[in-house]
Image (tube, each protein chain N blue to C red):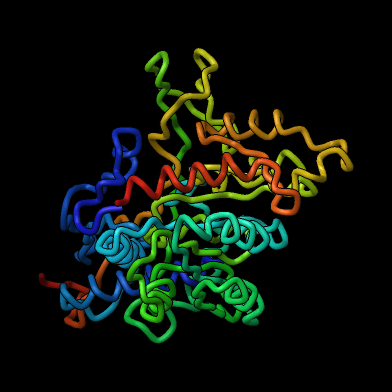
Length: 123
Length: 248
């Protein structure tokens, strides 16, 4: 269960972004997760409030976008969808492929609120 | 992953992570700030620092990963004995508790630092950095980092190593690469350990293990080794010598 450690790293990044943009709070956090990142979305979702408590992102909502597993074949050059433990090319069947999507663990963007009226914030 | 530019956004996923441009504003007037940073950015930054530290000392760093009891420490003991006249070795040991493994290594006359992770199920680059503070790398050729026995979490954390070695012991079954694809995808070499038990067990098929490894698009070599009998050790030792030579 390394998702808590990863969530703590995420909160560190989110608070850095909030601080550098002089935001009062963070309302939404968008993260892309590929299945081959080794991180489970639901566990990340559970760990998020624990890691966020008492920070500028204490009431933020975590939005996870699951990324598809896709490979490009070294042999035939075509791209295809693949599975967790089956990264072979679906066109020619060769196993010599490169992952082009599916191992992401990426803080995509955050939505910041300012302390000023109307939730506006200025950079 | 990159510190600033989001370079793990690839042609395959950019259409999904594009979020309306840098510093886009939402209709509510709240501010949407695009970040595009890997969640493990801080760890990866520290790992880079560790790697530079190894490079300065011309040290080859190996991350040993496996399930608990696959024989990492036994392999290290046999490796230390076999390379005693060739190479100077140091070991970083990761376990939840006890100094037992570090003591086994010290009994071989090799410096070892034990990281007790408490309840943490993996080593990260910061823990390894602290351990390296206690290790004099002068004259050392190879540092083995024995990760916490776990086929899941350690795979997500770069420690600054040059190579990942995954151990798959014969009693575990040959389908482990299919069950733990994240771990086995990260392996630069797979050692099928306790190979002396192949005959006794009768149902572990090294060919099937290799097939499962190829199914996850990993071209890594697989070697059968037995730390107990010494069978297959030569291939493993030659691999260490070859890879360590690249760091000099």
